[in-house]
Image 1 (cartoon, rainbow, N blue to C red):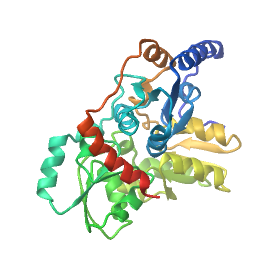
Image 2: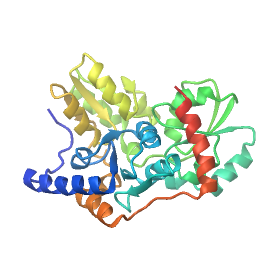
Image 3: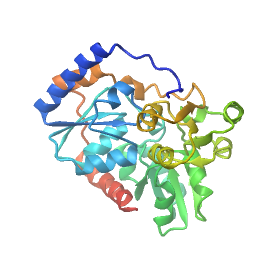
Image 4: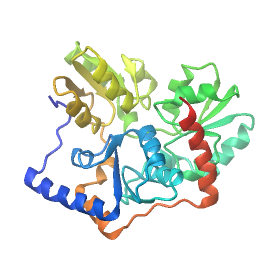
Amino acid sequence: MYTGLVVIQRPEAELAQLREQVFELKKKLNAIIVAHNYQLAEVQDIADFVGDSFELARRCAEVRAETIVFCGVDFMAETAATLNPDATVLLAASTACCPMAEMIAENDLNEWKAKYPQATVVAYVNTSAAVKAGSEICCTSANAVKVVESVPNAEVLFVPDQHLGHYVSTKTAKRMILYPGFCITHAQLTAEEVKQARENHPEAKVLIHPECRAEVIQLADVVLSTSQMIRYARESPANTFLIGTEEGLLHRLHKENPAKKFYLISPSLICINMKRTRLETVIETMKLKRNRVTVPEDVRLKAKLALDRMLAVV
């Protein structure tokens, strides 16, 4: 039962025709299509792999396809190009950016590093390759606590998500210095909305993403990345869940758990950038081989080192 925000579905005949074009082009290009959990249902359904930032980074590092068609936002495609320089990485929608990643540039990071020269820089994967290159190690929402705990330094400069950083600070004894960035989608979710959703569905488990504000996180039954939400919903004996992350995840939750109920806590949980990718944009990108994402080699090598360190944290 899919009871989240209703996304208008196109006629199946139309979608089938578009999917056929996608698969023909994929074969022609020897391509693999990867999609983030927040993508439209029609895009998730044509992907070879759907996952969160951590899972997509790992998959793109391992894949041997000639072309990676990335259905997500710009920093994710940049990460794929950083980890797999032999592949041609195409961003399916050229205008799909991440506002949080744009909140910190290389010069911003350098200024903060000068203020806190003793701190180890941990960069959320939602950053540019240049920012990753200036960091010791990267993290995702799935492994942020483990990454921070893994660094030997007692002082950590965490960029750019202050809300994820605050959540990590409650799980570690390390001194966390938080850069004031945030996810504009998750930051919209309010404690009042969570409380109202609980009143409406008192039997439901509340699953909240760590990019949300502290007062929202305090109301969660569990705080999880999107991949962790997928796993939790599958393994939990509960049958009803309130979901505190971008609405695209509900498609996969419903698809993998058809007997369970999932309610989006707030209709504001939509990332317009994640929704810029449609089947038509995937087709045009592959037809024209456009929106190729590359990273200068000197930047790539430094960014890859930070990403490799992240991937090594189990």
